[in-house]
Image (tube, rainbow, N blue to C red; front, side):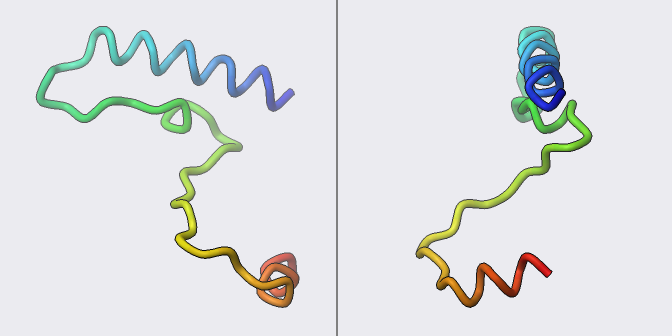
Length: 56
């Protein structure tokens, strides 16, 4: 199910980017999906303890 949502987000963002105003920033697939969110990449890896704490 999630792959279908990602694929639909890719198609939607491509169509939106082709038709967008040049002054507007480009769209990404996560702009059109409900279950995927934008996450900034970590500069350094986190420890196992930090990962376990985030799972709660």
